[in-house]
Image 1 (cartoon, helix red, strand yellow):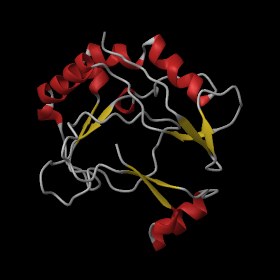
Image 2 (cartoon, one colour; image 1 turned 180 degrees about the horizontal axis):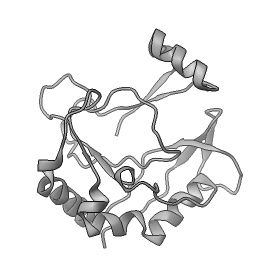
Image 3 (cartoon, helix red, strand yellow; image 1 turned 90 degrees about the vertical axis):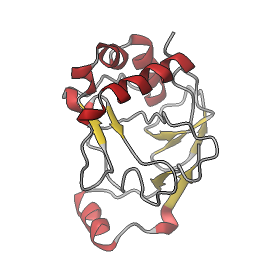
Image 4 (tube, one colour; image 1 turned 45 degrees about the vertical axis):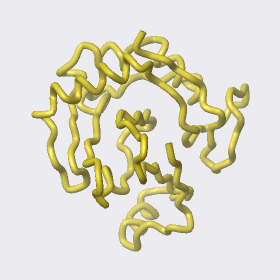
Length: 180
């Protein structure tokens, strides 16, 4: 009753080719189009969990606020990240079996940003420390300006290129923004 898993219209491979989804082709997925994950009731429960555990939200150098360790705080979250249908859905999309991060602090995290007239990003540019992530927007986006997820369409090829990128900054000509 909490999940409402929809398929994305497309996925992008690591060479940034758009591939209609679903597909039987084999490739390494970079990211997908936005798609529905939770039912209205699931979103309600998730929002309530975030509110209930708001005392655990911490400000970081990168984020206005982050709530980590939710699987330790909530059976609902723990059950969700281990749900067979949830894992099967994203395993199919990735073209390989997936499992939750083995370090529970990283298997579910909420980034908290200020709504209203803030010009501050909810999260700054970063490289995820896990191979796959599912980004879920819990905010009501009605009338909201912004909310873009920006993807760097550039194969960095390794640690040296990543360090160079950190020195020179993000080349905006390689940034693709996705509005939801």
